[in-house]
Image (cartoon, rainbow, N blue to C red):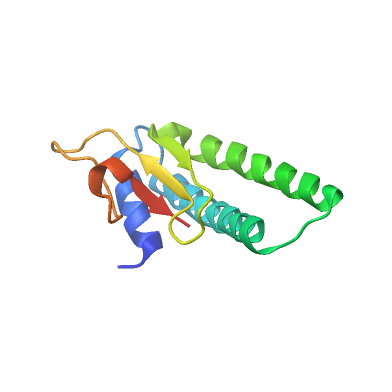
Length: 116
């Protein structure tokens, strides 16, 4: 399965009253935003930036954090943002399902479900 399909399958379990097509739309937007967020983290690590560029990138970063948090809010996870682009820069921490928290990272349940 693809990362997109896996995330759709996971969010369907937490969707509450949201329609399946709403989940699919949320996942599409979420993956785009998480990918853009990861690219910003790469920039922080690899580019020299002027003060103006730094301010613009900080604004983009905060905007993406707000958007991602709003997109996942109906599904209930806590969102963790990281600055190390070598791994997932956005991780979702869900409530347990069948006694286990969903995860797809080397850190297991405590590291959450990485996207992007």
